[in-house]
Structures are given as structure tokens and as C-alpha cells.
Amino acid sequence: MIVQMKSQCAKEDIEHVIEILDEANTQHFLIELSGIKMIEVFDFSHNLDIDRLKNSPMVERVVKKCTPYLAAKQDSTDETYQITLGEHATFGGKKLGIIAGPCSVETQGHLLEIAHAVSEAGAVALRGGTFKPRTSPYSFQGLGEAGLEMLALAGEETGLAIVTEVMGVEHIPLVSKYADALQIGSRNMHNSNLLLAVGQQAKPVLLKRGWSATLAEFLMAAEYIMLGGNRNVILCERGIRTFEEFTRNTLSLAVVPEIKRVSRLPIIADPSHGTGRRHLVAPMGNAAIACGADGLIIEVHRAPEQAWCDGDQSLSHQEFEAFMKSLPAFAEAAGRTL
Ligand code: PEP
Ligand code: MN
Image 1 (cartoon, protein in one colour):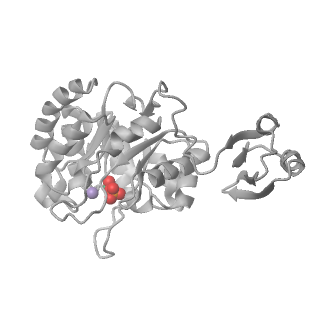
Image 2 (cartoon, rainbow, N blue to C red):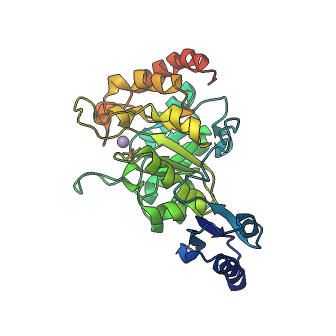
């Protein structure tokens, strides 16, 4: 089991816990992750009085090891956490949240056109990468801070909340200055230093599933974030890599109702990266809502064939508008509204 200490704990508080652990003849050692102090305990002889431990000063929690404790539903009546990006883009309630925008921020003019189009069609948040995780080092890597400024202006003009990716711990202060939510991309889902660091800042986090991560690994990544004190984590199923080749990834939608069963975190789906193919985005977006997703993140571009990246999976303004018109029927069937 793990005993997590409160962040303000003093040396004596840890010594007090260790005294209890020694009295019960347990084996234990101290773990320190990014300033968070925890004691791993092996109680092979079952002597330990767990309530005494829990009631000790400065003990934050006592958790059975390897359970996604912070994200978990304690019982079936526990509702999904409601998480708000910016002023009013809420995920996890009855109302669905739709995030839309280009794969990467290109120019201010393009971004404003897209932002207005997706806002008018009903999106509540604008996506767009300015630090881009690209497979090839020779591909466009994003505009960095200049792109963040463009996002902020588009957010101000339209009222959309801003969601953008942070790739490194060193960029967190910069990205969180402009963004309403920090996105952790699929490639970084296993980067525990980055997860801990976004857990120690205040902005909500959109955590995308690693493309080869199991459901348990996905939830454990969320646990790393929540351990730092930030419970505002929205999960995103974005497809996993399988032997199938006609889609870029395989959108693993069974994860959605399963996450709803075991966890209190909202979960959205990304049918753009989940399929890689424009004509599949709308049907898989509808399917995700039908099986209980709290929202979607969709790539939209003013001229997909001219996009600097991921044009093949981006919807045009007209396609996005048509998709948004198809959505209410699926939302209603799932007991949700738009
Ligand atoms: C993205 O959403 O911009 C992105 C790069 O997605 P993923 O991390 O899921 O590949
Ligand atoms: Mn993309």
C-alpha cells in the first residue's frame, strides 16, 4: 500500500508514520516524486492498524497499491466530475462539449476564420497545436509562442476556450499563460515527469490515450496528474495502433462505457486521429456520443487539402456544420444535450 503525505508535512510527521509502520513490523520505503512524499508499505504479517495510519497528522491518504484510486468511482452512484475550461466550456455534465479547430495553428487569419466557423456551428472550445509532436523531425513543428498568441486572440474574439498541447515541462508556464486547458498528447501519455508537472498547476488537462496504452495504463497516467492536486483531468480516446491499415488508428470505443463504469473522469473521443480519414470522422463521432462520451475533439480546417498537417482527417467548415446538425439525435438517444 501507499501512504501519501500532505504537501506541507514536516520531517516529524513522516517519522510519526514510520514509527507506526515499525511497530507493526512492516517493510517500507520513502518515495519522493516532484516534491510529493509517499511511503510504500509491505504489511506481510497484516499487523498494521490502517485507521491509525489514516488518522495520523499530515497523512493525505492511504491507498492500495496499483489501483487508480483518485480517478475511481467509490460506488456506482458517484457522478462524473464536471470540469470547466475557461468560463463555460463544461465537460462531464448532461451537456456535451465539442472542441474543434485545426491540427496546427498556421496563420492568424486562417485561425480566426476557423474559430468563427466552429463557434457558430456549436463548438465550445478551439483546438490547435503550436508545439507539435511530429513523427518526422523534418515535418512542421508548430509556431511556438507566436501560435499561442494567435489562439488567445481567437479565444477573445469568439469566446471559445483554448485547448493546446504542451510537450515539455519547461513549456508549462508559457502554454498555461495562453491556454484554458493543457493537452497531453498520445506520445507523452507515459511521460510521468510531464504528468506530475501538469498536475501541479491549476489549468485543466486533456489527457490523450497513448496509442499502445491499455485502459489501466491510461487511468494510471491520469493518476500521476491527480496526485499533484489537479483533479481536472479530461480523458480522450484517440485510437490505438492495431494491424488494421485502412484507418490511421483503431478508435477503441469500448473504452468509453468502461471508463464511465470505473472512473469519475469525463471522457471524450477524437474521431479525427482515431480514423485519420475525413469521411469516417462524422460516423465515428456520432458513435462515440451514442456510447456515452462526454464530448468530442475534431480537426476542422478552412481548406483541408491545404492544411499544413493532418488535412486528410480534417473536416471543412461545411462538413463540420453538417456534422453538428446530425449530432443532436445521437445526443438525445444517449440522454444528453448539446
Ligand atoms: C493532436 O491532437 O494534435 C495530436 C497530436 O493528437 P495525438 O497526440 O492523439 O496524436
Ligand atoms: Mn492532428
